[in-house]
Image 1 (tube, rainbow, N blue to C red):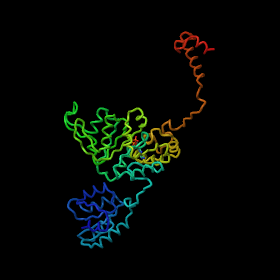
Image 2: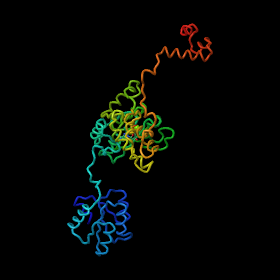
Image 3: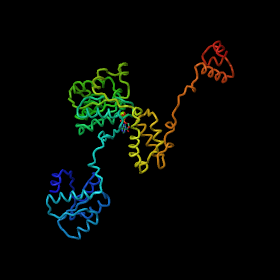
Image 4: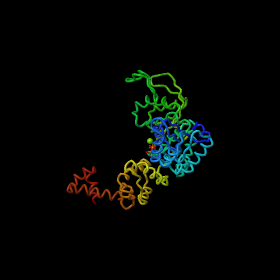
Length: 422
Ligand SMILES: Nc1ncnc2c1ncn2[C@@H]1O[C@H](COP(=O)(O)OP(=O)(O)O)[C@@H](O)[C@H]1O
Ligand SMILES: [Mg+2]
């Protein structure tokens, strides 16, 4: 009855039939108001009120009870309840009591706080505020609810897999499976059967029918990472899956229909592989119906502080039991660096710094190669003839000026050596 009334007032409710269940829900869920009876089988409501008042002091508590006694009422209010409602009560009385409880609540209501879209929490772990990453978010929004094939391009560590996951989990097929396959990590001779499955007897060792990743991901998303590593045999099967939406298991003629979204990713230059006949051009065009270019971190340095903040929150509690702040100077060093390993490298550096630091992450907690900008000034370089001279002199010194031996080592004849010495 409570649930029905509350739902008609547009509250979202959770039911528990015992204190034990209520505690489990409190642990899992961000609750804004607890309503409880007092007299219950097993652990009673007084215990729950005390428990919540101590462990979740910000949650207001409304007690309902069928056995009114002034003592009871006083006791529960002392132990943390905000209000006391006597059964039976009307719909209106309940509504007023709930409103009153919320008013007296000290809780900042996180659950009803408007979503902070600028930090883009709706893309899973993928975060960023730069215009470069926002372009990526925009494409994700356009593709998440359809099954268009997507091709993700970007350097290693830029977040290609996170982009693929964001597409799947933010869209309307998110309840279907998402299966990530690293085509570079599976041995070439296995990839085909892993992807498409096989029938018993297809090859030695195939002692039963087995489904592949394609069948397993049906109706959802298959993410083919490092697609550049797929063999030509796999590529032609992929092409067929894309064109005809059908696959056959290894060793079988039977055609199976599949209906899924294919996301492929690579950090290698497919155009180059196409030129070397190692990647099918027709497959490339089929795959890149929608192309997403994930920018390298050095092209969106404005996201560095946000990412650092995220990683500090992620690893601080794990390694140091708290969140370790970072000094301005240290952050500047991170923002100056070029990040060839992109976000994966940044994450490692922050992780290490948290482990190494005392209270705050300082410049000295960062790896040396980040600290000093390598300056490729002209002065350090020698002209070729200078190099040659220095090298010949070193060889001569090593053989005690024996020109025959030196000429042998340098693989030039003695006459040339004499000219060079002159
Ligand atoms: N935009 C982002 N926000 C937060 N973390 C990110 C972001 N992009 C990448 N990461 C992190 O960086 C690491 C590398 O990401 P990943 O998707 O595996 O990159 P790729 O597949 O391009 O090599 C992962 O640990 C991931 O969580
Ligand atoms: Mg990857």
